Amino acid sequence: MSRPTSIHVNLERLRENFRSARRLHGGALLAVVKANAYGHGAVVCARALAPQAEGFAVATLEEGAELRTAGITQPIVLLEGIFSSTDLGQVQHQALTAVLHQPWQVQLLLGQAVPPAGGFWLKFDSGMHRLGLDASELRWAVDQLRRKFPGVTFTVMTHFAHADGVNPGALDPALTLFRQAIQGLSVRTSLANSGAILGYPEARGDWGRAGLMLYCLDPAAPGQPVRAGLRPVMSLRSRIMVERWIKPGDSVGYGGLFQARRPVRIGVIPCGYADGYPRTAPQGTWVSAGEEDFVPLAGRVSMDMLTVDLTDAPRVTVGTEVELWGDRVSVSTLAHCCGTLAYELVCGVQRAARCTVG
Ligand SMILES: *Cc1c(COP(=O)(O)O)cnc(C)c1O
Image 1: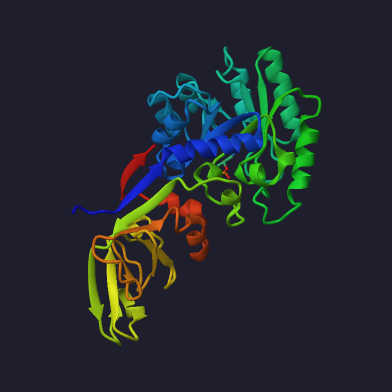
Image 2: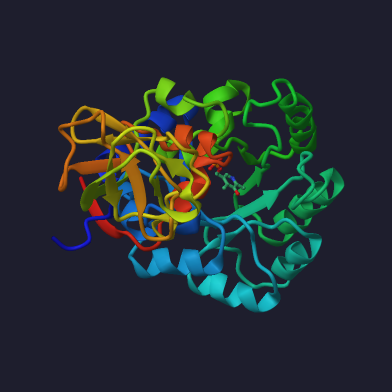
């Protein structure tokens, strides 16, 4: 067999998750496909969602251009905006909608002859204090741009620092600030990322911005997307390539981290941290094997391989398919055990072959 390690992306599940996200949020929904659709493949995911998504969101100009080249015709919101006036030419050429979050960007747009294709998207800083206009800059921007380009639509967005539910109630002041800032402006709104869509019905607006939840990844609270009926989209799979018995006292892998206390049947899986499996996974982390078994990680994860203890799973042998994460091993739970976020794991799959279904 050739190296059996692969990433499976289930596009039917992605579409279902999108429908669920929209049912929860109502109104229109941007599918956030930045960072190569959180590692799932921006072009395949955007194409799969194109019949239903009202728009897409990306972080960078290059990501937006990639979608246009792939034939995506919906609005594409550039969440990080432009870095210089030269970016603006590209934005116009690709008909992207760059979020305006600094006064100089508003000035630049005021100097243009034609308004942007998707109307204006302005970002209000509700407390994250990274990007965004303050309340008076926002009023000034809407006022000036409206005067110059009458009839063009405005969307005011904000991004919450506390939508992940870790700190309940912390979102409320940001929401109040946002409402005050847009009072009387007659603009559309865009507030909610996945955390807010799942956990804060009061923070919904005209446009939702769903990222993590489309891929069934936890914004914070473990299990939240699954409880909302979402299903995993990505799985990382491989097969047992070699098995061997080791004696009591023998160890496995770098540093001898796992030491056998009985005769142990070790299985070698050709998947390591270069494939995206976390090196920090603790001893005993479950790997799903075959239809019904789970086998524990034994020994340090190396770059190209990892080892598991097959002693108590006699059905599992060379050639048995294993799932490192996916349906039976939740990527969010795995990430949690490794002290990171599922987002980091799914974005780290670079080397594994890709297989798309649905
Ligand atoms: C990434 C991003 C989102 C999507 O957030 P999720 O938590 O992945 O749903 C929404 N809005 C902005 C501004 C973002 O940068």
